[in-house]
Length: 238
Image 1 (cartoon, helix red, strand yellow):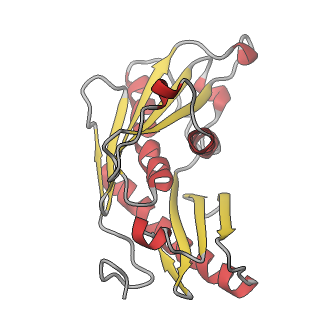
Image 2: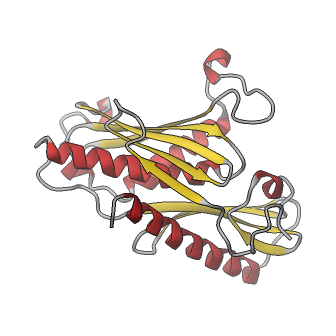
């Protein structure tokens, strides 16, 4: 029995709310069970120096956990003077995931900044951030087109992500924190709407796993991502 009574192949309750903030070009509040992440997309009409005058745009991300997002207060990283290794890893993952599904030449010489802020963390914050950030990005692209700044959409596909793992020797989908903290294996899977893998991050937490277990986890991940992609479509009314 899982802590919240779910079946092994069952996602937590998912809720996506686009246009969550007034001033962001695109925004989405994503809820995965008790995990809540606010994702926003902001547009700058310039690119990083390494892309200047190359006719390409850029999509990048920043990620953070608010101080009261977990049971113990998390110190703001600005107070520490630098981002942690975990934060850097996650925001790079979000950026890579979104760049895989956008044509940067069609985006033009502008930057889309994605900000993913964890309001409440109960496992799966990085995967929720990717799923919600796609909604914010798609909304931002639609606004650029409405404003006549883009003639065609640079989006090539959609993207979503989910966690899987092995808990008490059973492969399970979408781990909450209680499961994640004691999992034998923890894996994050990012996939596109066309069913292609963007990234698979899998780690044995003390007990190695075999190919058959990995195949079962990937099958669960595919099922979960399909459901999340459908939730994204419903968020836009199709």
